[in-house]
Length: 273
Length: 348
Image (cartoon, helix red, strand yellow):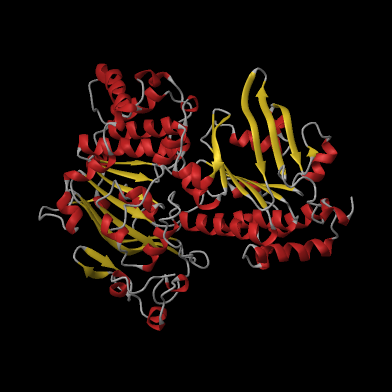
C-alpha cells in the first residue's frame, strides 16, 4: 500500500447513481431476513438519515456496508456500490483497504470505540500508518484533523478516559477526517450525549459536509435530529424502508402511519407565546 | 400500550394550575424540602448550596442540566444514597439525615428512585415477579398470600401483561424493563419518586409511552416526583416547576412554561436552543456554548457559567451571583437576569 491511497478517490464515476448506491440489499440470519432495502443512495456531500428504532435493521445495514455483517453471522445479498465498485462479495484485503479509509464509521458510545489502554494520538498514528502514511505524516495529519473538529491537538496525549463523551465523539470524527474518508456512517452518534453536546456534534457534521464534501449516512431513532441535519431520510421498520424522500417533505407531510407516530413521539418544548 | 394513550400528557397539569401559574405553594409545609444542600466527592463540589421544595402530589419538579451539573447527585442525596456535606433534607417535616432503624425503613418506602438504565437496576438472575415481590415482602405491603395478585396488578398498572412476572430481565425490551422498574418503585406506595433520566436510554417512541405512563400514574396516585433530565423537551409537559442546574448550582428555577417561553438565565436559553426540533422553519437559532462544562474540582471565579456565557460582562468574572427573585415565582442566579427576561439580550 502506498501513500497515494490516501488521496481522495476520483469522483468522476457515476455522480448521478450516487457515491454510495445500495440496491436490493438483503441481510439475513439463516431464513430470517432482517434488512431488505430496494434502493438507497448517498451522493457527494449529502447527508441521508436512516431513521428507525431498535430492531429496525438500521445498524445491520451499517454492518453490511462496512462488510462486517458476517462477523455477527449474517449473510448479505444484493448490491452495495462505492463509486461503481461492488462491495458485496469483495475480498477481505480489498475491503480492509476501503473500510476505515474510504468508508468510516462512528457509533453511539465513543468510550467503547477506543481502547482504554492507548493514548488517543497513538490510535491515529496506527490507523494512518495501516493505510500507508509515514509516522511524521500521520502525526501532522492527526493534528490537522483534531483542529478541524475544533479540538486541541494536545488532547492526543491523553487517554480516552480523560476525555468527555462529546470530546471522544469528536475525536472519532477526527479519525475519519484524518483518513480522508469520503463516507461517514454515523450510527446514533449523539444518542448518548447531552443535548448541548449533541448540538455541537451536529454542527460539526454539517461543517464537514461543507468543508470537505463528506457524505454522511446518519442513523438515528430521533426524527428531530434527522430534521436538523439531513437532506433526505429513509424511515425503517422491521428491516424495510416504509417511507423515504426529502427530509423537509417527509417530516412535514408524512404519509406512513409509523412515520407519523415517530414524529408525534418527539419531545417538544411548549410552544412559545 | 393503549392504556396511556387515553390520557393526554397535557391533562396532567390541569390538577394544579394555580401552582403552575405562580410558582407558589400553599402554606402547608412541602412534602420534601431541600435546604442549602452541599455534596462533595473529595475535592469535587458536586452540589453547592441548593434549596428546593416539592409540595404534596400530584406535582412534578424538573431538574435539568448537563452531565456534571449535580442533578443526579441531588436525586441520590434525597434517597440518602450519597451523604450531604452540609444542608438539610426534610421529608414530611422529618430530617432525613438523622433517620435510622424503623424510621429510615419507613422513609425508604415513602421515597423511591427509578434509574436511567434498567439493565443495571434489575437483577438479571431474578424473575420479574421475584424482583417486585421482594419489595412487597420487605415492607409487608400485602399479606403473603396476596403477593402474586399484587404483582399482577402492579404490572398491569405499568402497562405490562401479568405473565411478565415469570420472565427474566433479558427477555424484555428496554422500555419493558423500565416499566418493571417503575412498577417496583410503585409497589411500596411511595409518596415521592425520583426519576433519574428514566427515558434517556430509550427510543423516542418508547420514551413517549413511558412519559405518558408517568402522567397517568401521577394523576391516579397523586404522586410527587423529581424528573431529572438533560432534555428540556421532556419536562415541558410533566413538571409544574423546573430547576436548571449548572455546575452544582441552580441557574434558574420557576414555573416550567414561563421558564421555557422566556428564560431568565442565558444558560436556559442555550439549553432550550439545543433541543432538536422537527419543525425546521419555526426553529430558534441555536446558541452554541463554547467549550465543555468546567471541572467542578476547580470552578471558575465569579459566576460559574461566565467562561461559556455569551452575555458575560466584567462583573460576572469576579462577583458570584446569588439566586434571587427576578419575577413573581421566578428566581435566577444571573447578574443580567432582568435584561435576559425582558428579551433585551438575545444571546446568539
